[in-house]
Length: 119
Image 1 (cartoon, rainbow, N blue to C red):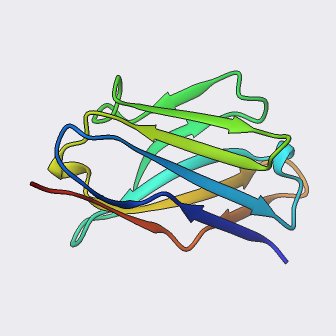
Image 2 (image 1 turned 135 degrees about the horizontal axis):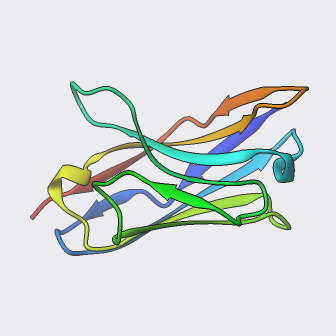
């Protein structure tokens, strides 16, 4: 069955770094655009970063530009989110999303990993 399993979350002080990973299985990873979303308590889920099928194009929320980097390894069915210069406002549950818009379409989500930035 389809699975997206995130890991790498945790507790970090402001200014610190974390690297999130999301391992996919059960579908053709290399045919899907990959995205990272986050949801803070009391807020709507927001798109943090996205990467195209072959990794040729990326996009970021303004709030994380210059601090976060999304990448993927299609040989390992894995997408990463390198987070640096973390701020307390980055605290959220981070979700991995796989999206295919051409037929057969698909839209899959992981269970999320908690990131807490606090002194």
